[in-house]
Length: 111
Image (tube, rainbow, N blue to C red; front, side):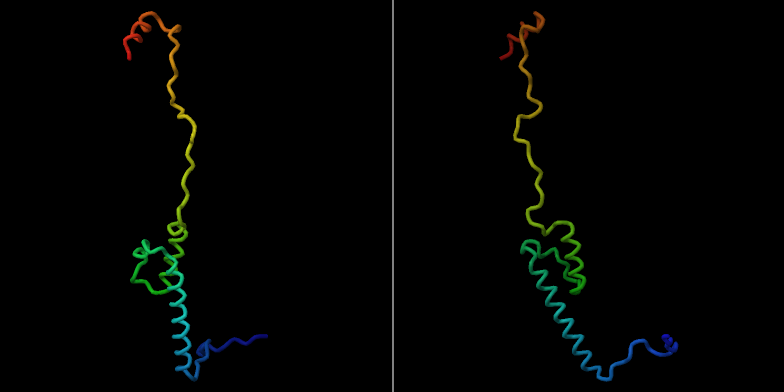
């Protein structure tokens, strides 16, 4: 059986040496900023101005993940294939034998 803590008892015990804890937290933050800078360094130079400057390291990583999801940093992107055949609107050559006499005469005046 587990015993429930009293309502006034803190869940997290305070650390006696807070300077060591503060130093550890600062070291972890510094490594996190270094990791964020390393990830953001993979952005091409011409797209670097898109990164918001006012965000902290976590915000920049979240922004990068969202931007990467859109495909902006994916390289060339997807280009649709083109049709190399004749266009479907190629005009048909009229058979003069099927035309009425007036249409045949009018056809003779075209160049």
